[in-house]
Length: 257
Image (cartoon, rainbow, N blue to C red):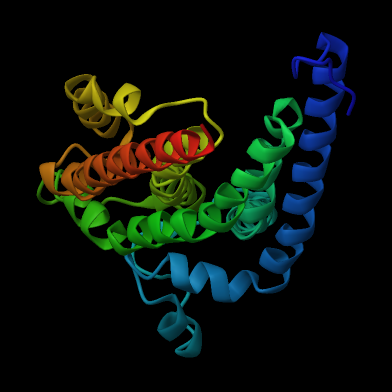
């Protein structure tokens, strides 16, 4: 993609670049969704485990599994499509995260692009760690939410709504764990300094806590803490890493003088 001498790109080129990245991300999600379509039953067995043992219900020939149900003529088809898309979004995360970063990369200089390799390497394991943590807290989140059901009343859960809840938890945790990756990557390309990251630490901590309180699907302190505490720790680690990188960069400049 052509850029000007100062690294800027015309607006139309930005829009073309954005369209290209969106198309590639969409294709990756579609192809990965085929995996979710093929392994549909295995996926729903795993996702439904916090609510019921679907595998045991299928093997015993039961017509129901806990409080989960599907409604409507198109309900089973809609459920399989949603499961496939959920699987596709998660499995293709390395690709669409890379496309997101590549949308920024054309405006970088050659050396900055070399430094941005950190983002490509780190984005996937950090997203996977966050998504795994989100999946691990699902039983706790479901138990807390079911605890609000009044006595003598049954709580029937539509599987579509349950999947929306699962998607929100897993993606929220996965994307949140990308915070240090973005901060360090922006520092490596020279866009953010360590002091710029750490100086407003009170605002950052407040924003992280506010974010977890606003977007976590449960309001219990345990679930919020399981997301907020690692995010705050990762924020400070990213800031201290950026400080060390700034000092290394300054020493390298002095060596050239």
